[in-house]
Length: 250
Ligand code: NDP
Image 1 (tube, rainbow, N blue to C red):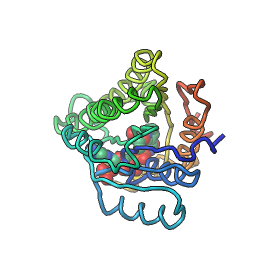
Image 2 (tube, rainbow, N blue to C red):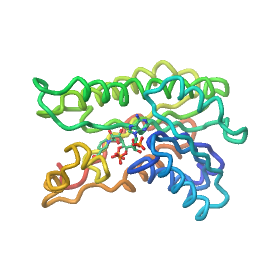
Image 3 (tube, helix red, strand yellow):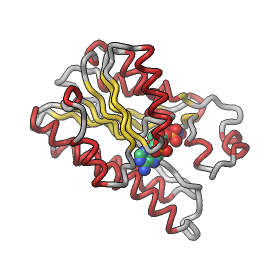
Image 4 (tube, rainbow, N blue to C red):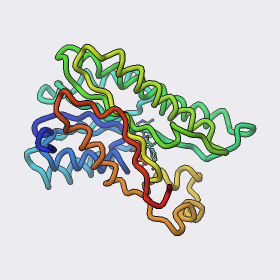
């Protein structure tokens, strides 16, 4: 099934670490071309070099991009190299959680950044790429939701809210695009060990490690595998939603 990815072009947000990085690598392994975007340009360049070394037949392009910056998003899409303009897959993966605080005290800055990245950023990139899909009546939007988009926990109202939005946006978009041939998928991971695991506790590594005590979390590669599965189904099949949990998370 993964052979259907050969020659496809994937536009990936948040490709500089974790799930985005792992997925970019796996897409390239299966013959897809990849457009790597994130804010940390040095990380993207490292990944680009790694992919070019390992999978020389894959065309790779990296572009520094903050998904919050709508004008920059449209510019990056506009300026794609000619051989990568026909994007087939959009992976809306960029996302973050800033601290985890009760609603009563969460800072306006944290609220702003989570909403601008996880909600507005996803809308920006989707609006910039959709015209490419609609012009060809094909394409696949794959959104990173979360178990946090199906339930909410203490101190997570804003992050959970942004992931509930991803769930709503995925459902709305799928129906809106029903007659166009464009597919829309949401992948909802449980705990995945990435840089995110530490970022969510504002850099407190001890606290982050404690979460995984006595359990094995998912790896970024486990989610990359899920994304590749969804992306490589035949055109008449859409994997609408996949909830993927570590066996020990329950
Ligand atoms: P990482 O922190 O490892 O990766 C997040 C990526 O998003 C980085 O590449 C980062 O790059 C990028 N990013 C953050 N803000 C922006 C921005 N404004 N513009 C562009 N890129 C941005 O975390 P994960 O790989 O774990 O997270 C990926 C997705 O998976 C997120 O949407 C997250 O919510 C979701 N998820 C993660 C879970 C987990 O347990 N880890 C569980 C469920 C869902 P840079 O800083 O260079 O811009």
